[in-house]
Image (tube, rainbow, N blue to C red; front, side):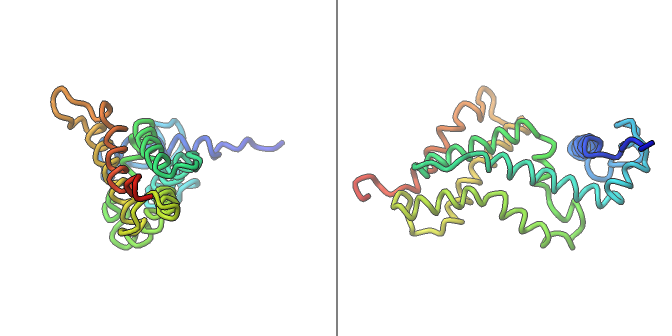
Length: 204
């Protein structure tokens, strides 16, 4: 008789999301594999089998956060209007953050804090991958004359990205000014930033 597979992907996902919540709420130091196993109602053997050790678990947290983020932005299909695509990517950015605040925090945490200084360079490729759809949209806009070519596509994408990241981070941290919400002007602000990088209509 075949033994049921208990150390499966479903268990792995439960452990990842619970671990992400712990790190988000109390920091990496508070993450105990024994307590994690108890919280998810499994054994420490299962945790070690799936991740190897705490470092492997932390790496898996970051990889899962990156995978879901890239997939979410990748679902934003390019259109004939690259400028609008940049805005739509910014909206998708916020959607991901609000739906997955724990993984979002892991995604943008300091690599040295997560894994030690040696992993800082290893995570640089992941950082590029996460905002590549935005770079691609800006580059398409430059190629068809909608966006200025005076700055590299990567630079324009970074400034648009920074606007989205700043507003979303304030919203998640509850640090908005009294009586104001980032949500109220989020899309309008994104469009204003994008407009600032567009070539004036009369010049096109």
